[in-house]
Image (tube, rainbow, N blue to C red; front, side, top):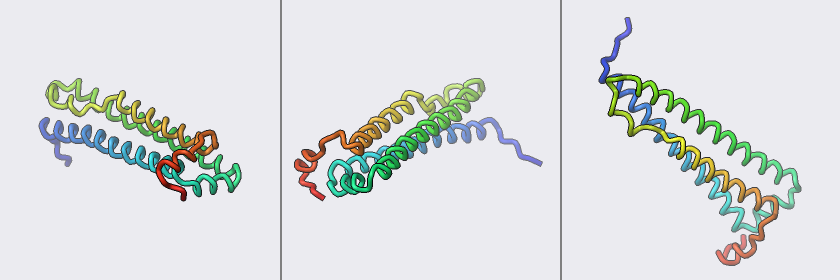
Length: 148
């Protein structure tokens, strides 16, 4: 026999789920952005990194470019899926009279998800430009004092 939760208990669980969707998504987005910014910084300040990728021929460079763009596409798709799941739960709560006024703070905004994806895309574009050799980064290395 299954035990039914009362409305208050169900509402607490559903609000916690909405809040966890948002918190986990933010953590994942910040981690992804940090990873790509670290990679961009490494490429901008390390002569050896750029020469290694350049000396290995186009295959390594092309593989890196395909990897970062595929990663961005998968991140964007996963972000949208998380948004849709969260939004579906939010819409169900909107239709539940008992829940009115108690869950709206936990809505995951589509604008925030879109903004994360755009920011990461900008970093991916910069990495692609550096990998393709279309950006003179020797000045960056000279200004930062890094010549590794």
